Image (cartoon, rainbow, N blue to C red; front, side):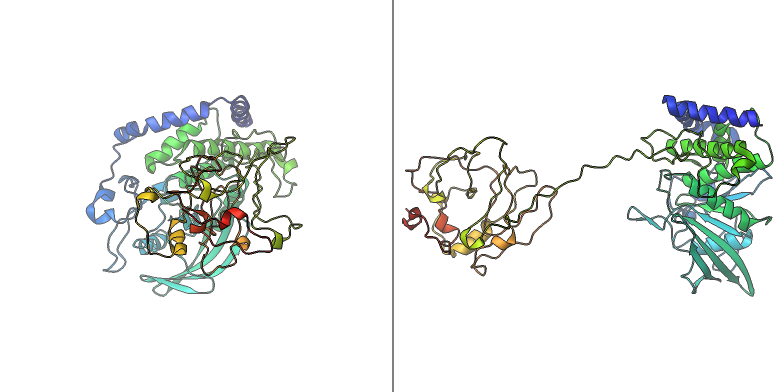
Length: 507
């Protein structure tokens, strides 16, 4: 048997280090065998497709095979239907070693407890969270700690709840039906993403060790479920079956993970649902085999240490576990973003400043001398030079010269013009002005609420952001047909005298 274990480990190591995809090719063959399995074994899903049972299926394409489905006996006249989306799965010791089922819906929670009671379930393994990615994956079918909840004729109390690790929550449930009370252990593995794989297998292996301690020699089946009861559920069943084969020393030269998964899929549809999950089974089994080969010398190691240093982990592209202490996760981190501050330097005296505008400059080059022109001096221009130091007012879409004179106050018109540019608008290196630099007459010019953006943090004070600036024109041109500076804001208040151009009447 040791030669078979070593051969399997060498295969996993070789494919992981060389980048071969023999394991992935096997999974493709498994998917192609689905139709053949149904035809060969005559697998049907008649009960799950009945109209009265359709509402009891979480996913319409995951229906239990009639040949292995769990049949319920009636408990009360209200709960007399025999259907539940669950299948028996054989183990090494014989049939009905596991029950693979979906996460219960709100209308099937009572059916779950009917199944637990009828088939004398002692341990439940839950391989999902109640809510994942904003979607409900499983209904809560237990009670809060030190409380009791009623589900049909069953009363469930949570006697103990202890997060043993960051990955597993262990609950002890007391289930009462009629005058009888039974104890059920509930293991919830919370670090397994839907359709994915855990970061490492150590947590699952430790959980399964605790599961077998609680199960002991109890003859009832292990109840395993995730959301659909096929992907993560199939992985757990496959790993546990291999563990039982090891204990019974039944790992021979003909041992094959592919045959094992095909046998699981003959009993429960879509067991081991993705290629990543299939590869995860290979690497977890390799860890188990490595532990056996290390023998008693490794049994003195603390439980928290990895004992499988000779096994190479899967490709870095996969969300995979680390094997051995020598393997480091190559997680790719996004470059740290340093948000551009809209605050002025602390040395700036705000009493001498109207606005501070940050503009990126090329290092080692002095800024060219650019004469400043004001908005009411520009006529039929369309664009502005990239060297402008002040923002340009964006005109209305219709020609202002052809519109009648509005009776709306100037500041109200300005408020309607203020709008935020699209997020992909290029502001030529400018940053928006923070709320501290609003005009002093804030009652006339209120500030729009700030909206977070993926690019820059803007503050809509009394300024518009220009997507297509007006072209710079001659300083001697007037402002006929344009929106003058006085049409937007009042004359600035401050210790300095305004430029003489602001005192000219508009035309």
